[in-house]
Length: 244
Image (cartoon, rainbow, N blue to C red; front, top):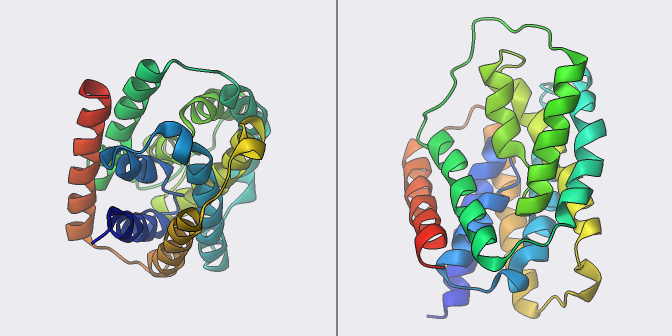
């Protein structure tokens, strides 16, 4: 059976899982493409397009479920969007880019296995300046790494007791969608040619994202899939760091 089929299936599962927690899945898509040894130039814009669709779907589902708080979101967005655009303009040498991506994959892997900050009993108000600075930093990193940055924002919101997990999900998904659009605008998307398989992979991600966002906004939890995906991302991280 063609490797393209397995890539599509893996993208569907990853989009399902990430959509269930309000994320776009860019780090997971990168993990799969790297495991199948696709050149970065072949999938870099496609990852952002998938990110935009899946995070947009996740945002809609969590928004509809009543978890979105605009006041928690806008301070991060106003600085992250321009800095994601600037970050995407930076040309990083291939070996350094692979190393940074490999390290970045460790963060969602840790979150998937349940490690990291736990919800506080109550939330506290945040400093507007702090939120804007974090937005600037995370947006810039997201632009450089070709991701949306939600894998960093979501645990940050929970760690600092600025939001509960369900409240962090739609904020992170909108953050991801906006940063991905900014990163796409700053990248060479006009020179990228989408193939028939690219559209198949995109449809697989959108389908998984639709299902995941629906179930995730209704208290879905599947630890077995989370552990499986974390193992895949761990392998991809090692491959990117040591063998690319």
